Image (cartoon, rainbow, N blue to C red; front, side):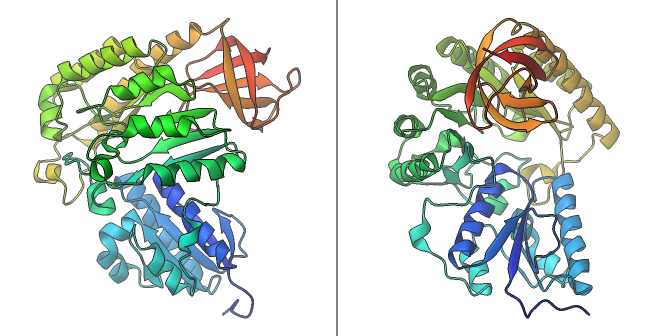
Length: 436
């Protein structure tokens, strides 16, 4: 059996799941580096002898990916290719006891809020003075800013509160300091994330205080774009839209997962909003911010979803014409309210409905993109890929939304810089242009 214990430990942190997990990994890496650990992130090199897997436990596919990754490195540990294996994150939080029994090769499992315990296991001290400082795994010109942890909602399909606990807002002053630190390092775009942005401040300030936070972040020198992810529609504070219209740093972009549009399904989901109220909110948003790009996600195949209820959702998407839309298939999750219902929509039908809804959105996206031809947009360039520089407008978030491609042979830009781009051609989810 090989051994690597004679040399200094090198840690590979592997992140699975959402952007909130990514921020947790970045904070973990920051702490380890402050304790003089050599750390890499999602590295394919095989020279790390300590592996930490930050897992996702949101839906079946994510859970399976996490389990497969744990098993892969458990086999590597058994073969002597690595010395230590630790697991943290949402799956570990939710199924810790089961995982300890089923995959004993893992040296220790930790929950979502057990960073100090994980560090202690590695003989590392938790450095409170690093608050607001963190290693960035994204391109240096953009970063995620987690403004709160946990969720107080009781949506019947969602297991997030089981894994992340109740909502806890971070103070405005702390977030502004972190934004300043990021700006000094070259970050130009902040993507605000939380399980629910619009609940921000209720626990700390006894009111929904996201508008005040947005004003404070917009004042940070060097931050040119601030993007809002995961806003809950029920009791949405429309003052957010006023700030968006007033401050040019706040992108005209709102990620608001709606999940469904049939009232009976929304009731079973415990979404605390109706189709009619949702339409009124969207109309208000587009009135206050006429240039708004509205992104949403929909959930198909929820228990009891009939053909008629699904068609209500399709009709709603056709009527609203979202700028951006993603689709999830329902996953029957233990300990959620919906687990008491019968998961009676067959997997094949869930997949068919997801494909049908995305086909509707694909046509809408193509039509909206055709309207952009001849228009000029401010574009932030993320990378060079093949013969193209690839960037985004303020209406697009990394990895999930449209991209703007300009030919590298006839255009020159620097990755991480803004440029004015005239759109010359468009497909369903990509725009092509030339630098002005």
